[in-house]
Length: 231
Image 1 (tube, rainbow, N blue to C red):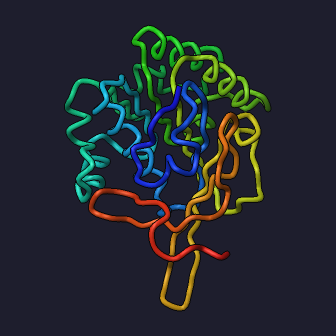
Image 2 (tube, rainbow, N blue to C red):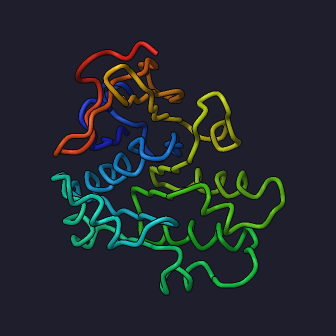
């Protein structure tokens, strides 16, 4: 089963779409397009009738709606469609869901809450923004994030995990565990900052791993148009 990313040009890089029911890490520096990429994934799912879950540590629903209002790929429409559950970890609803406030939670408690929610509601697409959320919620033992992600991989959802990362060679545990890794690049050229996207890893797909030009347009992110990236 292939799942569309909802991003123009991206599916061509991954053999026609993402292999479904898998875990993907979406990583890169701040401002590189990770959240927009993930919002397009959710909007595309809602338009296709998929049930979606967006868990955010960084922004409220209203803030994210405002951020995506500049685009016409229908994120607000997706949120209002009834197909998307949005959980702000620090809202009243989010605190009830995760059992906050209080000490960090046992990995089994958080895992069971999220996994049970996904399975009981037949969630098809999940975005977790970001790995900081996991490290905030979970206890300090070394393997808690790995255990959580292993459980998430066993669900039937296609999941994006957003990770703040500036060095594409500095891999974290989640990059090894994930089925796929997509890295967003910011770099300077003579005419100013440019952005690129690279599929670093993608199990089960014949992929193009070159850095692709990335543009922000009124329709959202567009991959591969314009000059090729030679960095």
